[in-house]
Length: 301
Image (tube, rainbow, N blue to C red; front, side):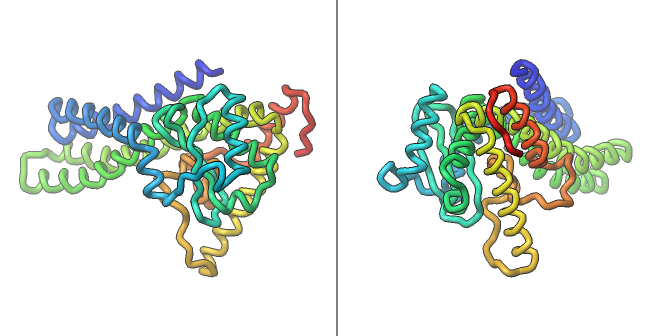
């Protein structure tokens, strides 16, 4: 299972790099294709190396000590020891959106972050399931994969936008023929869409693995299922309030970081499954039901 997951993920990341190289070829032939390859390498490295610092700044997260947040600190410490991981830093975001994520370039530099919203919403058993989920991301190197995929997809979205105008300019004032112009336009439109679909597919498959790891690490698959149901309901309520303009608070972070969180608080009911960064909650619950059966523990959902 782990080998198959690794192969699928590697293939999809390679597809993202291939899309960037294809865009480079349309921009200027083999030379630009090579430039785009190295651009992909540099973007991936920078995103990976500085991911924790960037996220702390963007999310306005505060790294806390045991004295400042004893319960969540104790949970992270207990489960990280059980997982055989170094103790990660713990951060809290002062935001009512109930959510959590992990980031950092490796296990030694990992950061587990929760919002004040999730601390108020969940009980200790449910928090253990959520933290187990996030530590599984750290153990499975999902942070590396997700950061690189997110950075490459984001780069393709922006490059695709500019490629349309470059192709139009070259078609009018340069020597770009009609066939190459149409080809460039098609790539400029389809490559960003394909990139987002690939990034979302990578995220979805890693979430299933993290759910299973969180259930086994905490020993409480039912508590994790309960947490997912509570989070799903609370986020839908927040989204309805924002649509009705009852809340002026902007969503936490931005959609480009949605794959980091345990649940996506940006997705609505009408979002295509192709673009969804997380599996539907009912599918995650069904998967946890199978995990609980394998563990031989009760599962009331």
